[in-house]
Length: 77
Image (cartoon, rainbow, N blue to C red):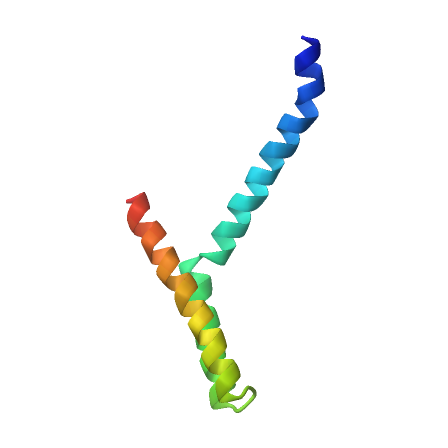
């Protein structure tokens, strides 16, 4: 009983950490959100708000996240 009393804060902290990780992954690998970011990025490049190097770097990162998101989606099905 006493052991449970002392481990309760640690257990709660671990569960909170898991929930935060889950929420971060959900946002980071949300297909709709990534698609919106790609569109915005393309528009910024077309309007010459960013240079080609910045565009390419950010596009590569977004496409990488998109690929992971699609793989996760397939694994869930």
